[in-house]
Image 1 (cartoon, rainbow, N blue to C red):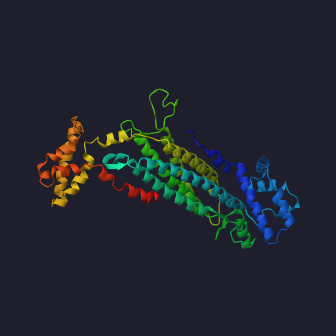
Image 2 (image 1 turned 180 degrees about the vertical axis):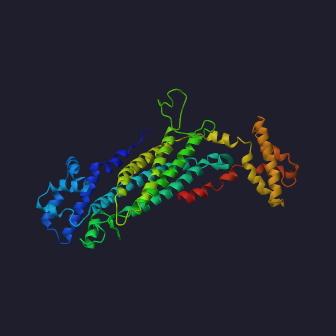
Length: 443
C-alpha cells in the first residue's frame, strides 16, 4: 500500500507564508472588532479587510533594519493600504497578534492530528476484530506467561490510543484561546469587548486573564498530550519489532515486491518502519521539557519561549502527522502468522497452564503453599527436560508438563487425570474475549 503523506498539508500550516497569513487574519479580525465598537468606519474597515496584504520578501528586507518581525510585517501591510493603515494593530502589542495567530495554527493542526489518530484507531480496530480469537502466548518480563489472543493485544492498544485522543481533544480546547489584552494584559488601551469580538471572529475564546502573552501552560498541555500519544505509538512499534524477531516471527511488517533489507545481506527483512516510528516518538517526547520550562517566564513576559516554540511547534506537528500516517499503514498491512503464534504458545511444553492447575488444589483442601510446591516442582522438571532436548509435545499431543502432572502421586490424590487434562484447555483463557471487546469497542 502506498502511504498517504498528509505531511505536506501539515507542513503548509507551519510555513512562513502560513505564519504571516495567520497574523494578517488576526489583524483583520481586530479591525472588524473596532468597527463593531464604532471606532473604525465601515469604509476604512472594508478597505483594510479587502486590500491589506504583505510580501514575505519585503518583510525580510524590512526586518534587516528593524530586527523586529512584527514591525516588519506591519510595515509591509501598511504599504498595501492608504491612510486607513493607521488602524491596523491599533491598541495591540506584538504578542496579541502572534499568540492569537499561533492558537489558530495549533487548533487547525490538532484537527489534522485528531483525524490521523481516528484513522489509526480504525486500523487497529479492524485488525483486532480480525484476530479476536487468534491464540498466542502472553509474556511478562519477556517470558511466556499464559495464553491470550492477538486481538486482546490490539484491543489494549486501541484503548490506550483512545485515552491519548481524549487528551489531544482536551489540549485542543485548552489552546483555542486568544488574547488582545495589550502590553501588560490590563486591557488599558482597548475595551474587553474588543478582545472578545476579535476572538469570536477567529473561532477562539478570549483568555480569562493574560499578561503580555498567552500563558505557556496551555502550550505545555498540547506538547505533553502529543508526547503521551507518541509513547503509546512507540510501545506498539517496539512490540512489533519483537514479534518480527527471527526467533519469534509471530508478525512482521509488510515487505513489498522489490524492497531491499540490506546492502550486504540479500535475505534481510527488517522492521524498518517500526524502528523509524520508535525514533520519531523519541524526538516528539523530547519537546516536553522545553515546553514545560517555557511556563516560567519573567514577570509579564520575556521572549525565552519564542526561540523554543519557533522550532518545536512546526517540527512536532509535522513529525507527529508523518508518524501517525506511517503507523496506521504499518498496522493495516501487518502480516500476522497465527501458526507461529501457536507454535510459540506450545514451546514450553504446557507450562502456560500452571496457574490453572494451581488454582484447582485449594478447592480440594490443599494449602496454597503446598499446591505451589506440587505444581512448581513439575514445572521445573519441564525446564530441565527442554534443556536436555526433549520435545515439548510428544507424538500423542501430550505436553511435557501434562505428563509430569499425570505421574505425580501427590497431585493425583486430589485431582483425577481427566480433571488435570481439563486444565489444558485453551478455551478457558478466551472465554471472556467477547466481553472485553464489548467494553473496549462497544456492542
